[in-house]
Length: 255
Length: 239
Image 1 (tube, rainbow over the protein chains, first blue to last red):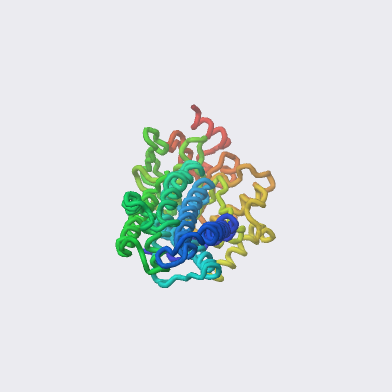
Image 2 (image 1 turned 90 degrees about the vertical axis):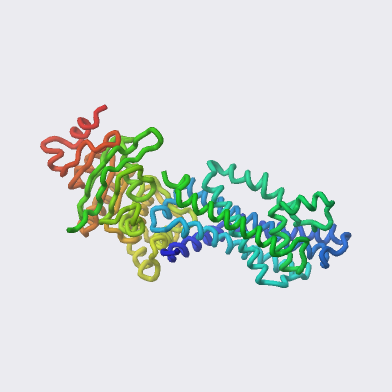
């Protein structure tokens, strides 16, 4: 499967170098944004809201905000790195090397997951310090982040391969990811929504990501945990397979 | 029998209706200094891209030291290095790391690779810039870095695509000396260039491509005879 393990590890390391060389674009903004959300929505406005799923509104917000940032950052990592590599031709360093499509895709995905876990942990620390909430199940916490990271890193790779200009990368974020995340239970529990909106939410994959991840904190969910994990897992598997096939076929990589 | 360094067998590469490479066959012996010449758009870069895996092959076959570049691609890619015409360095790495990470992609790492990178930086007079990003290098330095990167995994065959394009005379002579030294030490070299005097000076065998076909494939001295390579080239590629 991974015949060139050193090549794969080198790519992961390279992506980490990239992440930390643009730390002001990719690490601090999600942390600061989360802090602002917690203060404004959680502590200021949230003080007027009664408990949600057995925790304060500010505590309820933290897992949703982590998912929101994990989605944003893993998608950005995959899409920007692949597109930039194509744009600058530096991706040819990988393409002429004895690295398989699996080693390349896995390299980007694992790098995305590492970035995701790092950001999630920073926000988790904020949650502990400011609103006194920590995950109850670290296993579920890491599993959900891993699945979300695979899904959005792979989606990022797909878009990074197809995009013709940086503007194209923003299409998925602006028109699909952000709206679906915002209505996906980050800020509200489905139990607070009108019945019709609640039913529609069940078809929003982001809702299941947030629900599964929040379960790792609160131990509660409006939908069965297994269903949410199965949906996120299936989407991650599909996106990874598509990214792998596109890379193996050399879509916009090899002429 | 020892396989040639490179064997191209009836290579065809089409882009839609356009045939970029039209049935090229050639062999490059181990240790040769081989020139691949032709006017712009003749099919040189497409052929190179097919050799290194940047272009899909429509039909035909390419073997590097006996390893098919499609079926046995890992073994084939380990045996070839490419110094492309255009700079495509990783902008997030300093130039020492450009070499070390490239070695990593080839499955190589450790103290020996670090030593090899330092030795290459020394050999190409880039040691003082080791910690700088490539964007701070002059054009000549970038060209030398490109050559160094192609050599980091010590391939027995290296392809130099227009290595002296846009460099001054002094650097060109310096690069010629480096290429000669490399070839003397046993590395097979394939060179593409628009400077015909460069090909005449360096290459012991030359192929001229025109419209995706080989129009000449001979030892340099037999091809040129009593004339200059420029005269021969113009005659063969006249439109």
